[in-house]
Length: 240
Image 1: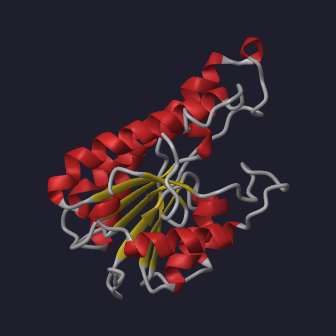
Image 2: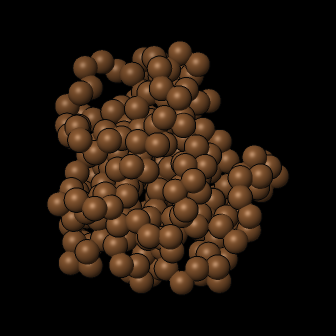
C-alpha cells in the first residue's frame, strides 16, 4: 500500500515542546510535512522554533485544558493552512508516581488526568474537525498507553493516568464509528516506553525512534485500521 504522503500535507501536534511531541515535529518536518506545533507556553518553544522556517512550521499557543486557547489556535491554523491532514493528540499529563495504593491517591489526580488527557483531546478534535474534513485523507492518532489497557492491568499501577487513557481509548472507538462515513481514520496508539520526562531515564526507547515509527504508521494509516488500538508501528493490536 502506498502512503498518502504528498509535499502539501499538514500535521498538527499537541504537546509539542518536549519529549515525543518535539520528536514528532522534527520527524514530520524531515518528511516535508507542514507542521502546526501546539505548546502550552510559547516561552518554552525555543527548540521548536529552530527546527524550520516559518513557511514549514507554525508554533501556536495551545493549552488543551483551556477552551479559549484551543479556539485561538484553530483560528491561527486556519489562517495558515486550508486543510489538516494529520492530527497527533499527544498532549498529556502524568500526575502520580504510578505505584501509589488507593489510600495514597489524591482524587484531584483523576481530575487533572481527565481534563488534559481526555477532555483536551475532545476539544482539539471538535475545533479542528472542519479543517480535517477538507483534507483528502484525514487521520487522527490519539496517543494512548498500554497503561490504558483494561485487559493488561494486573496490578494497581497508574490509577489516574491509566483510567484517563482507557477513557481516551473509548473516545477513539466512538469517534472512529462516527467519522467512518467521512473517511476519517481514528486510532489509539501506544508510543512505547520512551525516555522522556514522563517515561523516565530507564525507558528503553528514544523519543526520536518512537516518533519515526509513529510517522511511518501515520503515513500509511487508512480506513481498514480505524477504531483500533495499536502499537507505534500499527502492526501489533493492543487489547482494550
